[in-house]
Amino acid sequence: MRADVGAQLRKGVVEYCVLGLLAREPMYGWQLSETLVTRGLIASIGTLYPMLTRLRTQGLVSSFDEESDAGPVRKYYRLTDAGIRELAEFRLQWAPFSRTVDELIEEEHRVEEHHAKERNVEEDHHA
Amino acid sequence: MPDPVQPQVVRSYLSELQAALIGVPTEVSDEIVAGIAEELSGLDAATAATRIEGLGDPMFIAAEARTEAGVPAAAGQGAGASGVGAAAGGAAAGGTVIGGAAGTQTAADPRWYTVVASLFVALGGVVIPVLGWIVGIAMVWLSKSWRTWEKWVATVLPFTVVLVAWLGGALVDLLSQGGSPESGGLYEPQFGNVSPMSSLFLIVLINVIVGIWLLWRALRR
Image (cartoon, rainbow over all chains, first blue to last red; front, side, top):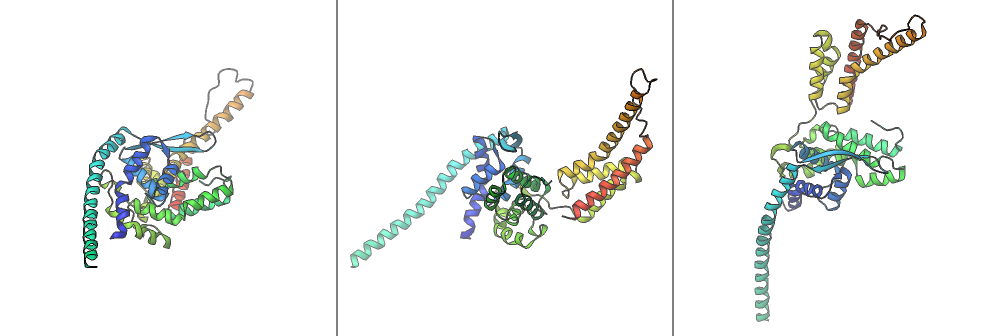
């Protein structure tokens, strides 16, 4: 179960990360893939395109072709109005959610720290 | 389609990738191949090889795509697909997808569907004039067995060939009228070299060829 935690967490948020990246600027597939792979959010470009297809089907993302000065014609992806709204909604939920998780994890961490300190004091006392 | 000016390393990689992506919904596999091809386009062999190394094994990419698209590993082929797909499979099944069940996509069509659709395209118009062919083309467009460009070829090729034949006929008429002394007046296209019967025969012939081609394209994957 522990090994799956990272994958589960990534899976839950990676689509919103794509929306977040596209909110900054339109990006092409390779560019998106490089960014997400570097950050450890996806394993390969193979994960990205089904996600983009899904986002486009849902009307959150649209694509357009643009010719670059030196390179090939690229397919760029950008957020639609629905995508902007979806991202805004997620931002509203994410902040309190991550704060709550932080608090709960930290609480447990503090309890452990407290127990450890108590054990140390007892050991010193016996010594 | 392979670009003849691409370095060999790029052509090989894209072919391997295309083969590995069998079972992935056509829309997705087309986008993956096109996205990678556009990035590798115009690069020399050495630079392309470096990029390809960074991309990774086509089987791995295909397995990831299959998992993300919700296609069962059995729908793909090749030994490499199963291991990686299985590793990430649990995450895909339990992952959060914006909009709920939108991630569910089906694999390629059953073989009988592919055969029937190809037969309708080839002979449907002969058995039930016009309507039979329309049914065949509709089945092709609804199918995941063919890529979008193949569907377009199947749809427009018969008309394009007839149009080209007509224009060719008209050009011959124009040239012959232009060269004759009694032509004098305005040019009136006759399309005389291609009669309606010939056009019909041409459409039937092209549809048979297109049907066979569609079947061959789908079954070789």
